[in-house]
Length: 98
Image (cartoon, rainbow, N blue to C red):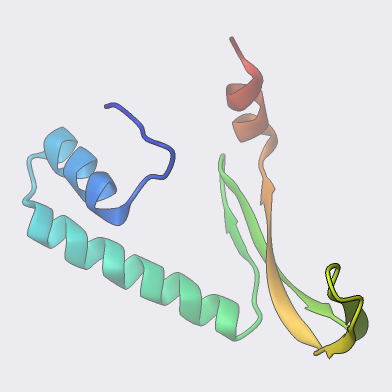
């Protein structure tokens, strides 16, 4: 499979369909449900850990003062929740192997 800069859901569906012989429509519905489920878990601020891939963790960021670099105008950045991804040791080893 030839990878571009960004991998799309459609390309993932095609790859899985080619590997398994299951139709792209069914694979697409499955992937949509999987993404919906993972999103719901993150919305409830729970963490996700996928063995041999990595972890998604929710983290609270406090409010702070930001600055527009062009105009030097200051503004308040609101408190928010962000998602961090931490790759597993296995994934890091695969990424760094030649």
